[in-house]
Amino acid sequence: FNVSEINCVIETTDAMKEVLNRDVPRVPTLRGVTIASIFYEASTRTRAAFDLAARALGADIINLTAKNSSAEKGESLLDTARTIKAVGANIIIVRHPLAGAPYLIADQVKCNVINAGDGAHAHPTQALIDLYTLQSSIGNLSGKKVLIVGDILHSRVARSNIWGLSIMGAKITVCAPGTLLPSGLRGEQGKEKPQKSLPHIEIETDLDSAIEGADAIIALRIQKERQKSNLLPSLREYIKLHQINNERLKRASPNAVVMHPGPLNEGVEIAPEIVSGERSMIDQQVANGVAVRMAILYLLLK
Ligand code: CP
Image (cartoon, rainbow, N blue to C red; front, side):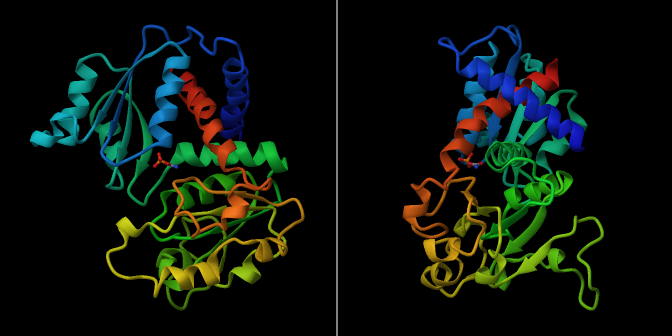
């Protein structure tokens, strides 16, 4: 997406929020449209938000998971997608543990495909939610310092946010223990800049320095399920060095907001008093998830 496409999603999201604030939060805009979601990985927020978004726009929605579909019997990803298309789906929403799965479907099956998270590669709708939530709370993102801290190595949210934030002109710093920073971010040995294809970002391992003057902090979950080897000595050490707590937050801008795409490891990435405090945007992110997904469904079909 370019700036005007992101702004278009943001403006459409505002209109969708207006719909959601009505006494009966429903419009017939997508009546007659069938949307199918296939989740090969667990999800609470994304799946619930797409489901509510589809219903709020008057569409029919079929929700499949790897466990309740014929994938259990060995049906391939493409066969499942072709079957869903054949029964009449106009949009297929896919979450998959392997990077590229939604793009394979988009390439092979003539249907609108939405990536609901593919491996450690991308989670575009989450990034759009984060951009919307940030813009609603701290205003225009141009020149704002946004710190992304946590398990960058395994995070599709970090990658999509790096693209989105950089397009909107934010100054991005990522911070993690060295073992949770992908080598591609740091650039090849002997070269000063990271890979040419990535936007410019600052990379830090010391959170106390990284958080200095930040306007927003996006904390990311330690993804124990994706870690193939022990990348952290202990969670206790991670908490000591990389948890967002009140002491550290004092170093950020006085109005800095704290976000987390969820699910969070309670008491790990963010201190509990901050999660429930006034700087936390976590509930707003979840709530905005419905309106942003309504905007995306609407823009794809209309
Ligand atoms: N943020 C996010 O993608 O959460 P879920 O895994 O619960 O969908």
